Each structure stands twice: as C-alpha cells, then as structure tokens.
Image (tube, rainbow, N blue to C red; front, side, top):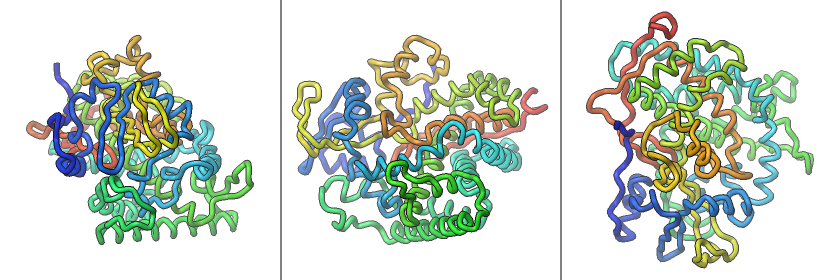
Length: 456
C-alpha cells in the first residue's frame, strides 16, 4: 500500500536542549512515536509542565465544555505578537468574546455566498497562471497555492486582486517574515511579562513593521470609502461597519489592522498548505484525481454547484486529516484539574495536536493511509465527531472554517478540470511544521493540460 509521506519521529529519550533544537527545526519530527498511540503524555521543563492530550473526552473538556478555564497560551502567541498584535487569534476572555461578536457575522452562511464571485475570479486567475506552467516540467506547487490563496483573501476582504500594488507588497512581506521568524522563541519556554525582551531578529522586526504599515494603509483607505459611501460590500466593509451587539462599539483602526493581519495569515497560510497537500495527494493517487476531475466537469459559476462536489469535498477533508494546516494548539490551565488521574497545576500547558489526533492508531482505521472513502464508513463518521479538528473545535473554532470548506474544494475543482498533476521522481515532500504544515523543500509536481475542459 502506498502511504503518503510522514516525518520520522525522534528517539524516545533526548535531553531538553536537544529537544529544543529539534523543536526549532520542526515541531512534528521533534515528537516521539508513542504520541500516535498515547491518550496523554506529560513533558517537564525547568519552567513549566506540558500535557499532550489525545483523549477525545479531555479535548472536549478543554475546547468545548470549559473553554474559559483553558485560555490560549501566550508562549506561542508571544512569537506572533509583532505581526498579529491584539488580534482575535491571540486574545482571551472578554476581549476575545467581543472581537468574535463583531467578526462572526461576516462569515455566516449568507455572507459566504456573497464572497463566491470573488473566489471564482481568484480561481480563474490561478488557472490562467498555471496554464503557462503546464508543460510537464516540475513546478513548485506550494508557491502557486500560496499565490492563489492570497488572491482569494485580497479579493474577498478588500475587493482587490493579488496583482494590486499594495496586495503584492503585503504578500511579499509575509513570505519574508515567515522565513525570518520560527515559531519557537524565548517566550515559548521562559515565562515572563509582555515587556520582557523576545530577541526577535532585525529582519523579523523589519518585515512586521512593513506588513503592519501596508495593512494600515489599506484599512485607512477603506474607512475613508465607508465614510464617503463608496465602499464595496466585501468582508472588510462588513467587519468595519459591524457594531458589537452588546456594547455598540466597532473596531478602532489599530484593532482592525490586527484583525486584517490574522485574516491574511490564517486565511492565506492555512489555505495554501491545505491546497498544496491536496494536489500532491491527488498526484500520488491518480484514481482519486480522475474522480475529482470527472465531478469537476459539472461545476458551474453558481454557488449551489459547490455543494454538489461531494467527492472533491471528501478528498479535501482527507487531506486536512493527514496534513492539518495548524498541527498543534496550545492552551493553559487556570485552575487545578485532573487529567486521566494526574493532578494538573494552574499555569500548565495543554497541547492539543490535530496532527497526532488525526493519525491516532487507536481511533482511526489505517490512520496513515489516504482514503477519502473513509468518511462514509462507521469509523470515519465516529472519528469525524470525536477525533477530527482541522479548524479547532468549540467556541474557538476557526471563524473561517466554512469559508475554507468552500474555497478549498472550489479551487481544487477549477484546477483539476483543466490540468492533470503528476508526482516528480525523487521529489517526495517531507512534511515539516513551524506555524503550518509545509514541505521541507517544497512540493514539486508536473502539470499538463486536460483535453476538452477536463474530459480526455
């Protein structure tokens, strides 16, 4: 049986400093193999204790039943704060609840229908770009997926394509920022106040300033358009004009800049990861690729047609299972608790790992296999409820989950009905994770045109 690539696990016992070096290079291969079978594992450092939790009942407790007792940990957030500031991704408590009350209406079902035309336009632009690369030569598909996902975000958020001067500058600055900033920094292991130095590199600070300045320019321009009555009816306008139903307050300029940053980072980075891995899996399993292409031949420029992409959606769900864009979520305990008979003290870290949960050997049938048909089985349906969380779960489920489940299948269908994707010999991608799951040396595929709009 052909199995999709999976990173090798680290040796069972390593020193703390060896673990820190491995973790800095890649979150996934820094973990031991036992986590694919364990319900829970405890890690101790000189500064705090950490509990990796795979038990579905404990996950429900942390994410759904008592989320206020397990707020997001700032150990990871501190590394992202230069660019994400006080965004909904990093806040907790009443601040987070207020932000979600303002943001969530923009991503409700009816509003998602309104974004469809912009998604379709981005898909057409992506098809046009790949047409110039569809000559059978190896193409690094992660870069193309990043371009397509960024285009979707800018078109749906600000009604501008990626070719717009400011959009292109933001895209380039984000790529530079990601290269300069690993997810692990001083704050991940040494607790301290926010003013404590984090020792970010000069390049990290420079790119963060550039991104914030560019996003501020876009946001100020949109506020002016709203004031003059000339603003387009897109996601940015919806969010900026929505008042908190409890207080009547709207986002001020500074807070809106932070929200736009997370919309771009989460919406672009995670979608790019998901799309690239899905295309690779379809190249690796051409029988499923042909099923998606056949289904995509019936796609029309009608929002309802996306709902008919059942095979395509199951393929995308399976790609999200094997390669969840955000591999780990970190929470912090605020009160004493008991986890599987162990006393957990306040201030402990609780790590919830979609990567390990989605491949857990006690939960899934053939967890490392690519099988989109599993979602129609009893095991697949049970695990979908208890062991599947590519967008987190509970009150803090990603507000853009519905957006992503339209965007991903739509872009896949538009690409697969026009092109065939094949693997490149000697170029098996190795999954690595810093902020999202990507490939160490990229994902290389050969692209060729399909005849007659998807039917050979």
